[in-house]
Length: 278
Image (cartoon, rainbow, N blue to C red; front, side, top):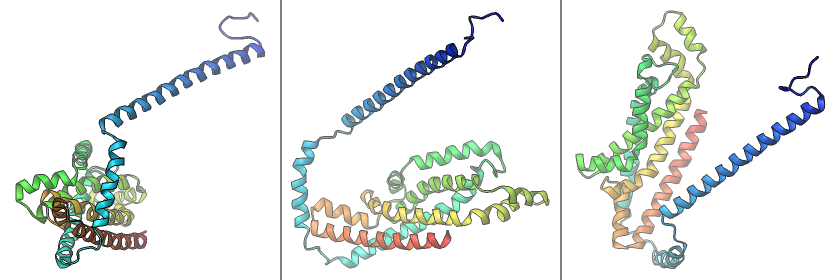
């Protein structure tokens, strides 16, 4: 048989060819690795400069922070009833905003789920709409609604609801897309309509995880809404901002302590409910 130049004819030549190929491949992988590491390093160097990181300022600012913390003791409890009312406003804002967002998120999640959407042409527009809502923080929404509806908790409720709508609906849609579709197809073969099949075959399967997700967002929004008062959206954040503006650290310490207590209690309650739903 004639020996060709295209491929080695002996085992030794084939082995050498494989080694050479692996060496070239290893070199190419090593070059890609170094280029990737260099790009990551350059990214963090630029980010460090853009973020204005200054360790000298941190070192000089820590003693000042220590003096503030020392002056915060003992805490000022003279306005505790007012703080309790503002905290209740914060919890109510989060509860109503999350509930409204959940009710809006369920039908939108159906549209944004590739496997159950009744109108496939709306799948991508629904996803884009949810991405737009998720991309704007509740703080920004609250700022816009303060200008639209005025100061107070209502603006905070609307801000929480819009951001949570996009975030929760996206998570709902992901859960629905990962659901087992056998029951859905079985119900459809009986002649049931599309929405009937979703209601009886898909919803029971995903309901626990959807409720768990809604509880998570309620817990998250209680923490997030504590700062909405900074833009005039009511709640305990408003008193927090007033204390910071006046440098009233004993009052500020009381507010922060109350926030921590409430968030911890709600975190435990939400975790207990999620475990019951699991």
